[in-house]
Length: 119
Ligand SMILES: C[S@@+](CC[C@H](N)C(=O)[O-])C[C@H]1O[C@@H](n2cnc3c(N)ncnc32)[C@H](O)[C@@H]1O
Image (cartoon, rainbow, N blue to C red):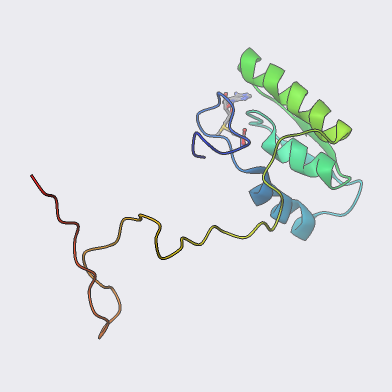
């Protein structure tokens, strides 16, 4: 998860809650128990709580466990900072500065020119 993501904590490899929400909705029913034995900062537990499932887990690092508890509390209280499920992906406009591949992977398609660095 990128450092500027709304959900980012100090955990180095947390999942976006939205990713787990999709699994929770596809694989469980309301009031089911979602167990994550490697809880981290509780992305899975938060996804479960947000959709009326119960959650349990284990986390070995005390600071991650503290953040996990706080995020679960926030999920219960409806004040968890998160990227909403289904928000569309940002589409850059024609004037946005974006990096482009210097080649095309589609046969027959014209390749983009590489960046020109002026020195
Ligand atoms: C890949 S991270 C999980 C991140 C989580 N999916 C999230 O979004 O926050 C794995 C976590 O498992 C914890 N962990 C590793 N060994 C453990 C153990 N034996 N018991 C409990 N937690 C453990 C690590 O501290 C780490 O936070």
